[in-house]
Length: 357
Image: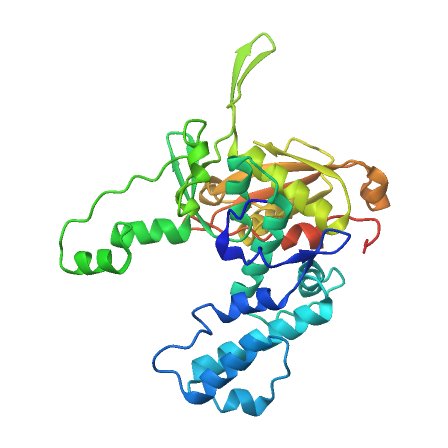
């Protein structure tokens, strides 16, 4: 098993017979070691004592007084979030069950933890899906389920880069705090060229210290009409969109036990369009407007990265009124060029005949 995302906390997790992840004390210690909770030089004695006690036994009971005795309000808030997350996770029994409970299909889910915790859950679960993968494209596409991306479009090419990495390179030349110091001093920064993942450098993905520095090509295949009913399709050997579709297929099967096939689309040409869902907030709103035949500004359409078609392997798994019909999906960046996939939308909004535990 490859630990290709050390920051996921995946290594100390265990699986139940279904393949879902069981939380362990070491997984909880992974959160306690994060900068939001790890003590610093200025930490008070109560904070240090609470942290040491939780490190020794992460599931130990914690009283309100234990938290209130911590002097720093931000630290108190961080502990309250962590304890809420810990208690919910242990009660659910697995990471997947807890994640599903946050986004219940019946509308009873209540989000009481920060987005960071949700992203870390999604990262560990995605790591579980791909832990035996040797496909750099697939693993890089998997990053999109829990790390916001910046999308760049130029000359027909669509590239997805990790937002945090892109912003750091933009601000500091990739040199962190030292680069920020040089920038403030108006000193020249070294130029760093981010690599587009391709056949030549795919082996490097596994060796790179920061794998999030690779760009993923989300460009559609090129279709040319040669007239006389002939169409030429120039298909790229490796597609980031196809890799992402494969990850989403695994995500659905892992959580719902339902087999689906997903493939990228350039347009929806279906007079019997019956069901759709957005893979992000922007795409959800756009598809709703298109479905209702509302006028959509060209600027919004230009921000659509891709469409997808999802088909159930067994139509009997679908609601009777849409059985056998495709589900159309959209992927879209916001006005600032940021794409943030919400993989929970696939779990909440698919037209399932029944909820499968």
